[in-house]
Amino acid sequence: MIYEILKELNINYEEVEHKPFQSFDEAEKVRIKMGGVGAKNLFLKNKDSYYLVLMTDGQKANLKEIEKQINSSHLSFVSKEELKEILNLDECVTPLGIINDKDNKVTILIDKTLIDKELLCHPLINTKTIKIKYNDLIKYIEHFNHKYLFINI
Image 1 (cartoon, rainbow, N blue to C red):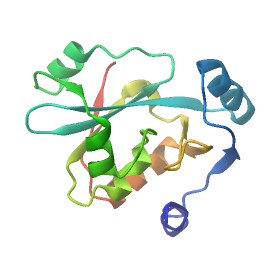
Image 2: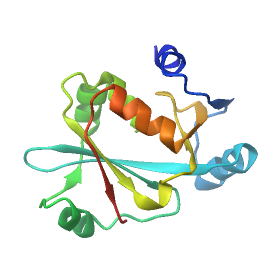
Image 3: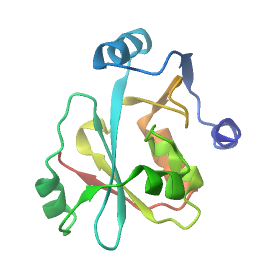
């Protein structure tokens, strides 16, 4: 289904199959092979909302700083059960997972350093990585009518 949507939206991508990553070094090998920026994804929530944070692999998220930028408080990580319920994903958090968020519960928070980059992300499965352009990811997000905000991580 994901590939049909990418085709429908005229989103070009490159794809590599691999074993699930067990370390940052394994992910780095794929990043070097494909080029682009590895996208680190966090799935967070507060009392009322869900947020999928996109940043570069090497970044560390300061939840307090993110809270300030989105006028929120008490952000915490979503449980595996909620990840499955909302995005129908097991362990592999990916922005492409919004395809399964039929109720548009999730807001995408994109670190500004990702603007105009080629991004590496999983296509709903952790044994493949695709590279897509930033603008194409925005097109994908907009196709599913999801809200997105730019933040500084």
